[in-house]
Figure 1 (tube, rainbow, N blue to C red):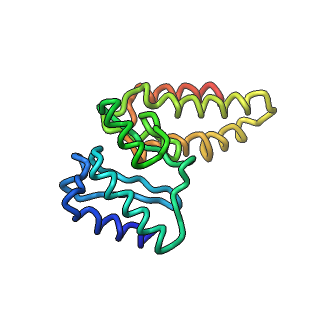
Figure 2: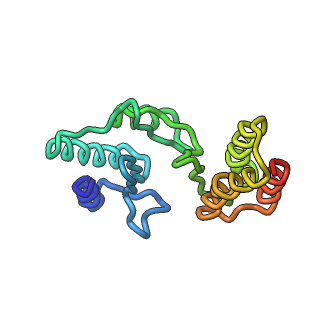
Figure 3: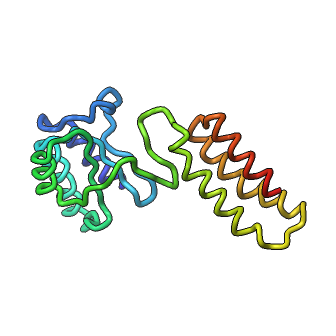
Length: 177
C-alpha cells in the first residue's frame, strides 16, 4: 500500500490531476485502512485517467489490481453523460451515498438523528436477542456495560452524538436492565 500511496502522491502533481475541493488544501488523494482504499479527486475525465494510470503502474510493479466487483465509485451532482464517460474509464460499480465504513456513515454534514438509526437499531436488535434468555440483573448489567455501551462509545469517539440519540439509547438500556 505504501507503494500505491507514493504512486498516487506522484500522480497528484500531474497537470491533468485535480484534487477534490475538500482535499485540495491538505492535498489528500487517498486514505487506506488494512485492505480498504478510498481515493478522492475531482470527478472529471482527465483526473480519472491519471488515477487509472496510477493503478496500471501499481499493477505492473506488484501484479495486484483492484477487484472491480468490490470497488465502487461515488458521484454527487454530476450529469449522466459525465458519469458514463468516467465509468468507461474506471470500470467500477456505482455506489450510493451516504457511504458506511466500519459500521458508521461517512457524511460531510452535521450528524442528524436519522444518521444514528443504524446505531439504535443495532442496540435494539442485540437487546431483543437477549431478552428471552434468563439473565440475572448482574448479567444484564455486564452485557450493557461491555457490549451495548461500547457501541455508543465507539460512535461517540467519531461523532458528537445528539442528546436525543443518547436519551433514546439510555431508554433502550434501562428497559433491558
